[in-house]
Length: 141
Image (cartoon, rainbow, N blue to C red; front, side, top):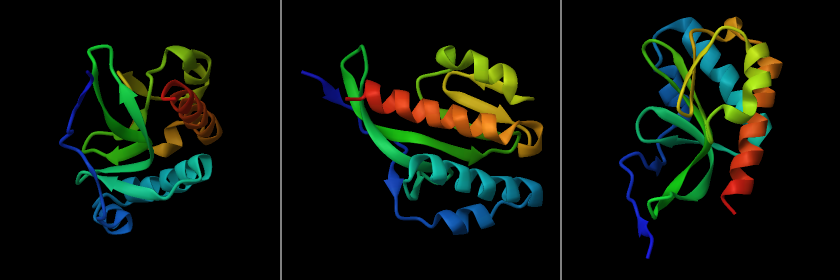
């Protein structure tokens, strides 16, 4: 029987707008509001806080190879100290062509790291998020 994992980072009712307005770096705060709009357009979902520092859109149920299962955000982002971290579920293997066109970024696991939004092509970013959401929805069924 699959074991449902209770993740530490849970969706909650905290204010996304208040959280983003608390970002002290003005450029990062502006970038966050732009990413908020972009992800909202792509997902057609309302943003929700996940834990105290992740803005997430939608959710899906996953079952890992180990039998563990749980719920997680379809896509989202967090304004971390060093970078803006965007969560691209399923990793980047299927998105290599888009990554080549994206601009200045780094990746690790399911995280896309960018210093500032002006470093990347926003249309390519939008396409990357959209593809990730489509793939995640298909795989979670």
